[in-house]
Length: 136
Image (cartoon, rainbow, N blue to C red; front, side, top):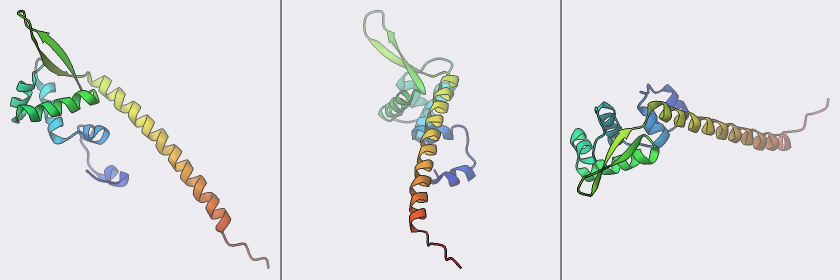
């Protein structure tokens, strides 16, 4: 991923690139998310691992990152004789989009504040170090 904002603006990004850009998600995280979106019903970690052809523990870590970012949700399914297991499913895309929009708005406000601080700091320094005009 590009380092500077100007490089990011010049890059041809896909919408899934937002997962990486906003939350630092990895390629495997995106694969797991796509698998969950493509599934007809919620999936277990074992099913997700099979879908992305990875070990269960590796898929589990990706699932945990997706849970932390709110991109997926978890339900508990109880067995009749006791015990339970978890299944995972994608969060409603409109909720994800709203969350990313709020994060973008917060980032935009913070950048605006930093730009203003930059201008104030260097405008003051420029005024105090500018050479005096020569009267003629």
